Image (cartoon, rainbow, N blue to C red):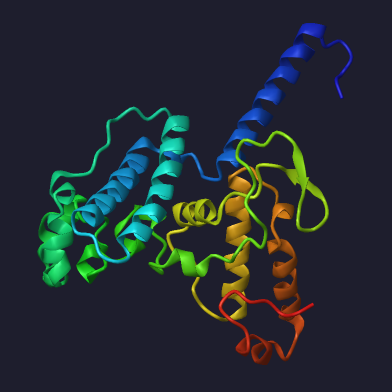
Length: 269
């Protein structure tokens, strides 16, 4: 409410200021990341780490390289979108040594990185990743990749719950009926790979346990990633499955129930 005597011009200025504040809040929420996380320095480093990983896989491929590269490319695409939003303009490329495959073929691949070589030189400088090359993971998994984007498990694809509904058409302009019977945007949900990449980008340590709270957190963080990608929870079956897990919090028999379930399985009904 406005006090009497306040001019029309003053009221307009107050309303305009409030609207600007609300817009700023909306933009902050829509990114799914805090302002500090959108630093070009951090985004550029995350991008280079992923490009290094891809270059290493291309230089020294194995039977799993194609799948690893496709998964990491999805992360690269998301980072590039965030860099564009943040106004980052640096020309980020894979580091020279990683681009030639030295990190994948050489010390890190032979385990010498675990003895200190990676800590002293190339891997520590970003060529093999983020320092996790010291554990021998540089050529094998997610940990070498994206700084905060590298979920601690190193196997984000196995940890993120399945969406439970077919991906939408990215070019769709009309709604479609979602898995719960309500209308959702035709472009939703995103692909599983896009969601996995967004989960990895936001979570340095994605829970991998089989206990109830770890299961619940995996579902909650996955739903958050879907919303970051501008799709509603109702475009997947995750919310209903999450509810069946949270209902176990008051169940004295929950440990026995969970013991018979797979990593991301939920109780029937």
